[in-house]
Amino acid sequence: IMTDASIVSPAPPRFTKVPVDQIGVSGGVVSFVCQATGDPKPRVSWNKKGKKVNSQRIETIEFDEGAGAVLRIQPLRAPRDENIYECVAENSEGEVTVNARLSIIREDLLPPGFPNIDMGPQLKVVERTRTATMLCAASGNPDPEITWFKDFLPIDPSASNGRIKQLRSGMEFHPIDLTLLKDPINKV
Image (tube, rainbow, N blue to C red; front, side):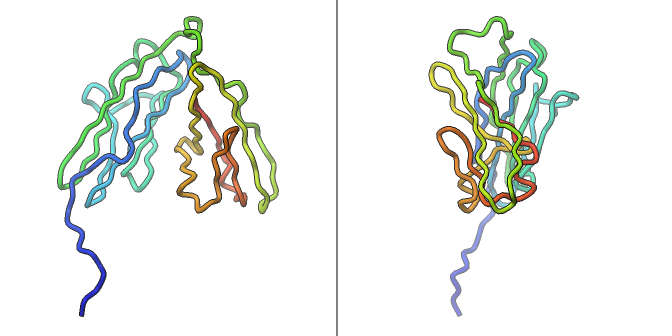
């Protein structure tokens, strides 16, 4: 008897989301996102100078059963937080590392055109079966790209079965469930 089930062979980790270098504002917040795939499923962790990150202001939020992790730093402190952070993905088949650099600028020294959130999302009360639209306006030169987070994790509209749509001016959630808007955060 033949089946269509494919045989999956073990595979070392491979990154599906890599963190990008960022410039943050002193006193502000940054989030680096990292995710990997492999067989067995890899575990992702964050290091600074080769050691696990460890600070009350630095938080690692895991997702995808540990195969993804957000490194969130708040409030940013210069020069202490300025560094290269490494995302490490490992499983029994191997280990891979990718780096991202964090630079920090004082708020009074921001260059012309530096991204700014002009209007952040507002708290909303919406009936459970209705659609909610959350708006975010940002300015800068070049035009900033807006990334949406919920409970400190990046929102992926393509993984929401059509429930979440990213619009040019914001994010549309439908139908609403009670957990969706628990802690909306956006960042430029």
